[in-house]
Length: 167
Image 1 (cartoon, one colour):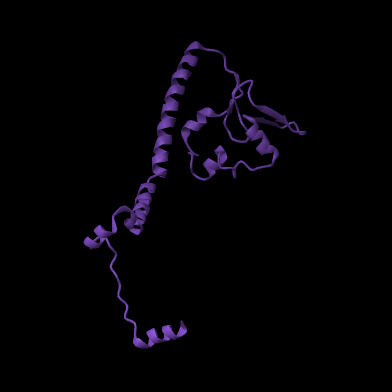
Image 2 (cartoon, rainbow, N blue to C red):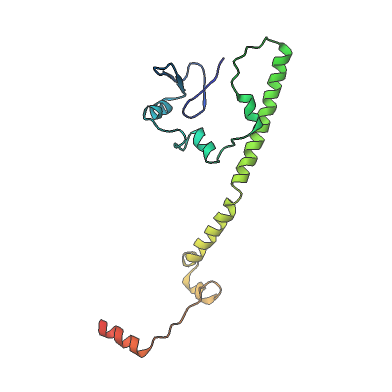
């Protein structure tokens, strides 16, 4: 059973699924679903469409360099069947998947490292700006620590007279 990769989004295309497009120069494009095929026909660049694997890798959202990707490469050389080799390969595939999941999780935590502090700062700023919605105005007047300091500005007589004349 041969599993192909979608040309547009890089997801796996299982046998009997998807669409195959053959260009005049005999280049074969395989698509996992009509969404990918339609985007290809609209001449969209997969690196600019946010939900594709190419976009995620280009913008640092997915891992790009990892030794576990080496095992996923396509090999066209036929191998003579050996029961022990097949058994060892299946065991190795399980280990590799486990390693890949752990590395992806660590990559995600590394990416999200600064986000928590940023969200905390934004929440504190919003709370400071809209404290009057959280607490009643009477309690704000009692506690001086919750209110912003009031600034008194002295206005000279001449400025106040000029303002009255303008009105």
